[in-house]
Amino acid sequence: MFRALRRFYLVAGIHLGRGAYARSRRLLTSSWTLVCVLGGCDPLPPLPSVCEEQPCGIRETREGPSCGNGLVEDGEDCDLGFGNGPEGACRADCRAPRCGDGLPDEGERCDDGNRDDRDACRSDCRRPLQSTWVRAPSGGDRAAIALGLALDREGGAVVVGHGQPRAGAVPRAWVAGYSRDGEERWAQWLPHDDVWSSATARAVAVDAAGDVWVTGDAVGEHDDDLWVARCDPEGTPRWSWVQDFGGGRDRGVALALDEHGVVVAGEMLREAHDRDGLVLALDGEGERRWTWRHDGPAGVLDDARAVVITADGGAVVGGGEDDLTAWWVAKLDASGNLVGVTRMRGQVGAWVSALAVDASGDLWAAGTEVLEAPRPTDASTWHAQPWLARLDAAGGVRWRVAAPPEREARREAYAVVLDPEGGATMVGTDPIEGATCSRRYCPGRLWLAAYDREGTRRYFAHPEEMGQGEGRAALRDAEGLLWLAGARRLVFFEPDAWLGRYRELPPLEAGP
Image 1: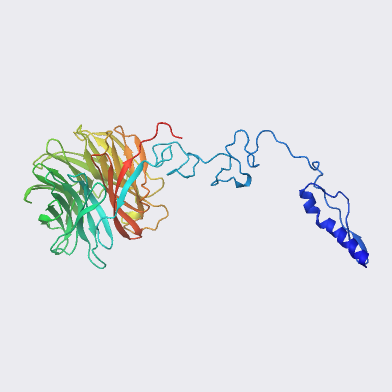
Image 2: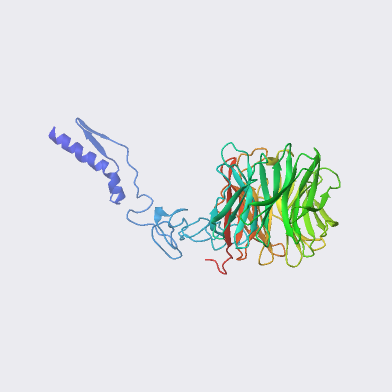
């Protein structure tokens, strides 16, 4: 019995060791194997030989280098064998990580895999904008949003908006001053005496004496009333001017300072389906100088959303008319008399959101065009694109360009700011793909689109710090840096006011 067991273990061990021998290329080549047990041996089917197609011990040879064999050969930057991969230290094609391979690596802010300097990622793997700082202005403990910006005399900025001072409180207007380094110098809630149930500050300007001028709307006894305030350099009101024009919704949306005081653009609602664009001028003490109304050809819903002062002391105003199916721009003289109007229909709807005048007297207008509106009363269903136009001093359109979204979505422009190179930059909000929308709001993110004097796009950008939120206002300071304001939506429908200062990064002459 002892001999039989010994013979069994000997033969079985040879059989079980075939895998190990195969790996070392020393294989048994017998055509059959016996497994012996007590009482005899039975034959098993023959095992196929791993050396039938190629002699054992001979390595396959190939022409040229082989990526993935673990050897760095001619034409390869690296080769980690099985360690090669899309996100590894060595790419699947045996190339080292590099700018332009479509994967952001250490030291790269972005990598979109192309060499186009006009998109959100430069060919040198830098973003067009570099943040110097980001702040959350004093918009209260609850939801808040920044709506307007203006430079002050010290190189800082004043920001306005509305927010909730505490849980359960009605929204109130607020104004705050910031230094160029992002430090809050002062902040005020308006009004001080709580004469209104709520208020919103929508636009701001700072005069040569440092006084802060604000416009917006306040909830009066029944409906919204247009509101203008002049404050000292720390936001304390010197006087407030409130006017009910007899309709359900009167509001100030934009303002600009002239040599006599302020010109305000907004809207007044006369009846349910009859709203007019409104422009009025006040002197330094809050006395009205003149009023002008814009009633479109169809006599329905019109508004005024932007105003700038021209070199001759007049004003240029813009907005939407005829149920916002067309955008319009009007020139008024220094006494508020109409000089002329330029208008253009959109595919479905259109309006002007912001205006700027350059040193040559040309007018820059930014706005939004609605291309489709499956459900007109539900803005979340709109397909809209922002546009930028350059007009001559007489209102003639030199050119007009659009920045359509990549899919059917509501991309909207809110602000425009002139560039030192002679072009302009639009700022707005781009809905986030796949986000859930309400009837009035779609979660979005801030975008910028910069163009030169001829309408050629220089870049498009999404600032990194604004993952979700809105871009509402922009300005450029004496150092050439961009100030941006709006809101961050960290909680779906509860925004936090947001303010940032950014430096533009020009493309490198030769990207890596």
